[in-house]
Length: 352
Image (cartoon, rainbow, N blue to C red; front, side):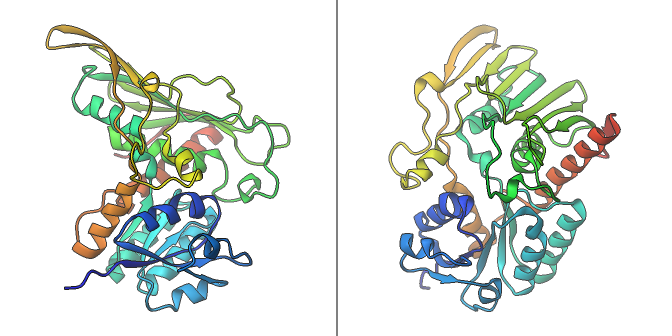
């Protein structure tokens, strides 16, 4: 049987298309970057001469050779475009956030089942090296029973980015949908759905039209989780702080190097890919088997390419998805609960 790469279309060639999806698709032998939707420019064709640049979504849907569509357009378009792609018989990857509402997520999940197509969400931050390392610390009980976890995803951007849809008010806009969809996905991977959410969300930058900070408190039985993000943090602290009955694990403030490497046009999976230098490794201070252990833990190399490897296995071989749409639906449920909590100034209980 001959090898057949998955012909893939990307619906936008902005930040997510040019920096993330196109290079990862190009680097994986199981995929072919076949079509890119650009309304006016030809940038994708300049970078990938073998791809076809089209001017309309309809051209993507009507192309019988396209098997997989990456929906990486503005958030409010995710549901409708993903639905049309599924109805056209395409497999679909949706850029985070999955949808704007839980109802939209439920409708897409039902459509994927109806048409027997693979539907997933690009939760690439599950494959950050520091998160992979943190996950292993939790799974191996290296700090004992976890009692508190604090996560930050901060930036210093004290200006309003001009001509950006992300800075314009509207459904699905703001930092909680943008960065929060990464962080809440990570929390759900580690600990599952909390019992209740207490949230404060707002605008800190002068002239801002969308939320640019959040402080979420997620309550579990005997576990407190704090998730924070702001665009006005110039001096950053640890990304992750994990505390348990036997010790603590603290990571550095450094973000995973894969995004910068992709911006620099480095090839995913090349030598040294996703590796953090030693001075950025997380620090463990705990008791293991009665012995006090203190020191740095080598950060597991990050690997965004693994997301596409899993997608290939799911589409071609029917393997289970690593990022199931039902999981990303729960992220949206948490976001909706956080906004309700902020609006009512009270904790919102969740059905688990």
